[in-house]
Image 1: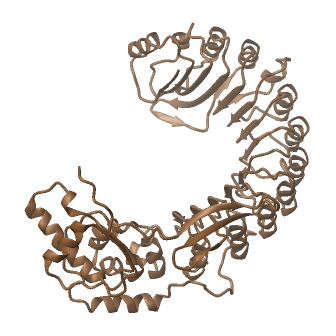
Image 2 (image 1 turned 60 degrees about the vertical axis):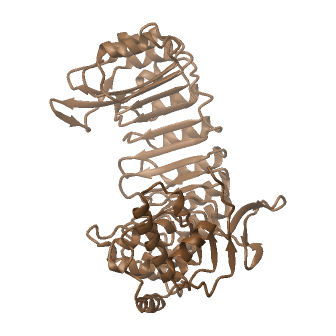
Length: 541
């Protein structure tokens, strides 16, 4: 049983909860008041997993509490401690709780079954680990914001923890190439390595990345990030990682400013399982490199290229199918219809997007190439390979025009979120018309009909563009439990809308009741371009 408490509760209530949960094995507490600073309440529970996020006054220490905690829970397998120091009413994120060397030594000696250990925002010295002198069963180790932790601590952990699979070293100033060399030498089975260095210098160089590439071939997650600009990482190191660690699923090389298109090309050519990639602040990356990367990594779902100053307009022509002048002409043509904008006040759900195209994955068993089999009702079956990116960030890429952004959108038909924040004061209507239409194309028809058209006159015109209404489903209004007068008003609005889009509809799904509604309205609706008609069976009850 796992207990997760995020709200502030009283000591008595906490005791009652523990008393009624005799089989409790894991507990996750976020403590923001003085409810529990002594861990006496955990005595005798024989917990296997303990995760505590605590807000601690500067005058308080928990060294004895931690020793008592591990002593009374001998079967502990996971200990995750996150401490924020508080001075009066102020939080001080620059000062961290110091854990004594003897505390670390006793925790490791008393918890021989410990597999996951994390000290977050705790000042931990390497001496606590080097003085332990026992083999560790750790598979996951995380340490962050500890200036006292250095290469000796990493070397000790990697030597004595033979089964280490996950290692996270975050914002520890004294970590150098020596630590990375120890990881490469002693942890060949490592699956996840996360390095986040707060300062840039000669501490961690490209040679460290090469060492990881040569030794840790089974890596699935690699985070090689820096707070400030780092010029020690080169394309050669990233290429070595890509060619050696072919099982990578997530990578991050944020603030490695000298990484360029060669790195992206190598990753795309070798890392077939990649799902998430981040190259924020890598100045050597260009628009051409991003296009190639997106086109090659078809299973990639998230890509962050924010603050990449090299991503600027190139000379490649736009391949956008939707031209700005064509959109404007279409809007002006729609304005000629007198009934276009008169009955949009009250709407009902029931419109759906075009579902004529179906995509299925296909893997060639010989070449291991992955394709997308794309079925089209009109054009027949065929193959089309495309990217599956759902999130793309080009934040602060100021010299990239909307024309080239459109070319990226065409490479990402599954895109759901795009971050291009340049001017936070930009109005939504300042977005170029082509981008706005692409955004609206992802909105369900019922929302176009019921919500988008009522935002403003401009959006009202956009909401009835022909491409949005090739396929249309008329909802059975008789199933909506409303008064007859209100239902009649809704029906009038629906019929008026159909009159506006009648010449655009090619595939129509309508119930018999819907047909009767149109007949009763005595409107002169004619679907002149209709190609497919579907009348679903009506089920009573």
